[in-house]
Length: 125
Image (tube, rainbow, N blue to C red; front, side, top):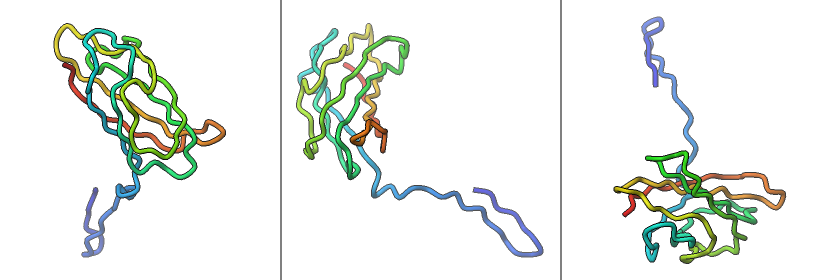
């Protein structure tokens, strides 16, 4: 935010921020995830999924080794707020020391257009 004086009046530039109360959200726990390339995704919780969401596409990135191809998967969205362990297949974590991983979810409409994104980070192990 910038502020400046103009003709003796304080003027403030305000940056518009989307209403966070309506933002798509995602969280996860490692749960049953086995060390070293468990092919089953961890349990994931979704919140405030946008109206019109038909599928959710997930991708995992190791923030300490971003070039490693963990992949992800796409699941049909059935209105439920949580996905169980193994909802999609991917290449699970196997770091030599604790690494931070980010899972990103993209809400897709019937035509496959991304209508919202959410992500969460967590260390493993």
